[in-house]
Each structure stands twice: as structure tokens, then as C-alpha cells.
Length: 146
Image (cartoon, rainbow, N blue to C red; front, side, top):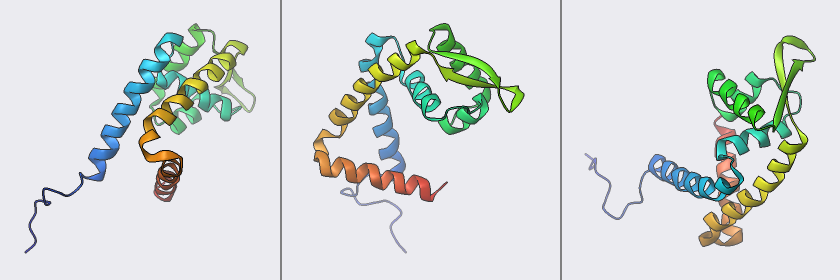
């Protein structure tokens, strides 16, 4: 019968590694984005809204992996900051289409520089080929398990 305990020199489990990498990356991006007065979640929403023109709030919430109520609150925050505007969805008046304002596009651009720098810093220990390989491998795993 196999030993249920992994050997002491075994690497930690995948879930542990992914969780702690995500926590450390979130901490880095939060700290670096703070001077712009934007959170990583707000920046991700701007990024998603920019890439998904014409999508409803509900569709963007699904892409971001957040519930509908949290999405409404997030869009309210972005709208209060002047970065997005809601309009009736052209295909369905019951839905809102959310678009970036000129100010929102500027914030997206400024945040992208910071996020790109965070990503380089976070993955620097792997070198460029290793960082690219990790991102491609994670993308493959994610898309294979959708």
C-alpha cells in the first residue's frame, strides 16, 4: 500500500502553488497600481470591457468570473470614477452595454504599463523563455479545462 504522505522533498501540490502565486501577484499589482487609484480588479474590468465591445454586464461578469451583484457594484465604481458609461444594449433594452470613456481608455493605457512591468518583475526569475513557456502552459491548461 502506498504511503499517503508525499516525501519531504516533493514539490507542493498544484493548488497550493497556484493559490500562493496568485496571492503574491495580486499583492504586487495592488501596490503598484495604488498610485493611480485603481485596483487590479477595476483594471481587469476595464481591460475586459475594452476587449469585449458591446458585451452586456452579465457577459463581462462571466468572463471575469464574478457574480452579477459584484459586477454591478464594480461597474458603479468605474462609472463614479468616470471610466465607463452604461447605455442600453442595442440588441436588448433590458441589458446594459458598458463602454470605456476617454478617461477610462487613458487609465487602461496607464495601468497596462504598470501591469506589464509587474508581470516582468514577477516572472523575472524564469527568464523570458521560461516566463513565456509558463504563460503558454497555463493558457493551455485553462482552455483544455473550460
